[in-house]
Each structure stands twice: as structure tokens, then as C-alpha cells.
Image (cartoon, rainbow, N blue to C red; front, side):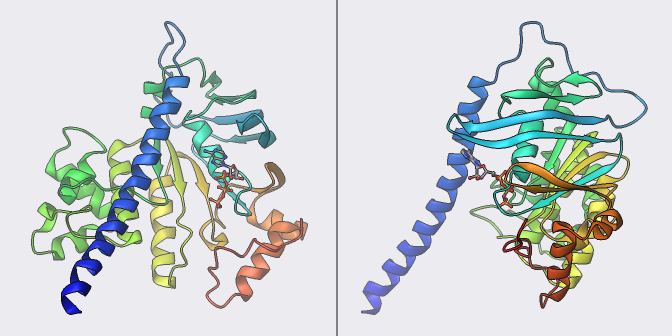
Length: 309
Ligand code: ATP
């Protein structure tokens, strides 16, 4: 019995690991497929960025569908002022993450325009566009290599000092040096498994090293304890500092200071303003806020669900 149990148990672990990596590969392949459809125009210039700071980002009457039969975004229109933070909240499936995929030009839109400092993202090279944008995703894929390599990936050729500086800024340095092999610790599928929060901090360090002028932060949906919550808020401020930022938020407490909050529902923006303006409006956002205050942890990422809009 025991003899049978051990290999089966081992196979179970192996299966879960393979499934996980297949999911990542699927993501990768679907991205590769999409990039074949997305082509640079002939002689497209690079995105021009001002030497004086981050650019303005504008979504101008954007309509978008992944598939012909089902429209996902309807006349989405907003501006993120240069160097400011815009947060997007709303039901699961309302189209929040789609905005970040479109800004990165993983897909092309069907109507409207996405402009960076007045330049249509369709007209500039994808390479220069993606160089300008840093993404901290919900779930970061780590390479089977050292933590140092995984951070330095943000900037090929980065020095050890640079890697340590960004690890400190992302509050992951102390954790790294507490490991027996420090920055040389192997991570990824075959190395040390990091928690969701630790992985996200590696992603933040990587992004700080890339030093993009535009920042997309896709907040993890999993519920957090209040210490991690505070850490995320501090980190968000750190990475958003003087950068034009788009934050896909699941917890309202992390975005109360955002210069603009967009509330999305079924692919449209139904409310917009600062936290105080939206509270005064006493609409969907205010309901969501109330709901999160009354939920036990105050951090339930599902607090928006079930609200009538
Ligand atoms: P969540 O809070 O759960 O992350 P979201 O608001 O970010 O949700 P999106 O990921 O933007 O939602 O998805 C919006 C809609 O687009 C959903 O109905 C989803 O099913 C659909 N969708 C997302 N990705 C694809 C895709 N690759 N192909 C087809 N439909 C998609």
C-alpha cells in the first residue's frame, strides 16, 4: 500500500507542476500568436518621450472585442495626467485588465485611439512602446535561476549594486539576505518557491530596475493581512512616484490616494473621480467602499460583486 502510495503521490505533485507550467506556456503562446497579428507600420518611428518627465496617457472613445461576437469595451474615454495615478475598480470581468493589455498593445482596438503624449500607439514601434511601460502582474512567472538574475532581468547588464538598491526599494532585500544563499538562491519551479507577495515584490524590483515612464500595477486578488496590505500601499507609492500609473485594484484601501478612480461595469466607465468625490456621489463606488468596510478583513477583493449598478 505504502509502495503504491508514494509514486502516486509523486505523480500528483508532478501533474500539478506540469499543469501550472502549461498554463504559463499557454499564456506565452497566445501572446506570441497575437504579436503576429500586431505589426509595426512600415518605417514606424519610436515613441517620443519628453526628457522632463512621464507622459500623458489617453484612451479616446475606445471600443474593443477579443472576438467578433462579443464587445468588451464600449466608448471608454479617460486621461491619465502626466505623472499621476489612475486606479480602475469594478466587478470581475468588467474589463479592467483589458485596459492594461490594450495599453501594452497585446491587441489592437476596433475604434477610438490610445495616445501617449499625443502619439497613437499604433503609429510607433512596439519595441519603444513596451520599453516605456512596466507591468507588475498579479502572478509573476519566475525563471529557474537565482533571485539576482530574476531581478536583473528588468535591465540586462545591471550591476549588483543596482539590483540590491531596487530590492531594498521593493522591501525584499531583508528577506533575500536572510536566505542561506542570499541573492544566489535558486528560485522558480526547481528552486525555492516564493509566496505570491514575495513574487510580486520581485516583480516590483524588476520593474524599478527597468525604470519605465508608465507603470501598470495589477493588484493580486488574494486577500491579504493588514501588514501586507500596508506594505503594498507603500510599494505602490514607491513605484508610482513621478510615473504615469494605471492601477488595476481589487482593494479600495490601496487606492484612496489615487488622483483619479474609474469605476467600470460591463465594459463602460460608470463613475469617475477622487475617492472623496465618489463617496459624495453615493453610488456604486460608495456602496463598494461600505461593503469592504463591513467585511471582516476589510480587504475582500470580491466586495464589488453583488452590488447593483
Ligand atoms: P478580474 O477582476 O476578474 O481580473 P477584469 O475586470 O480585469 O476581471 P478582464 O480580464 O478585462 O476583466 O476581462 C473582461 C472580459 O473579457 C471578460 O468577460 C473576459 O471573459 C473577457 N476576456 C478576457 N480575456 C479574453 C480573451 N483572451 N479572449 C476572449 N475573451 C476574453
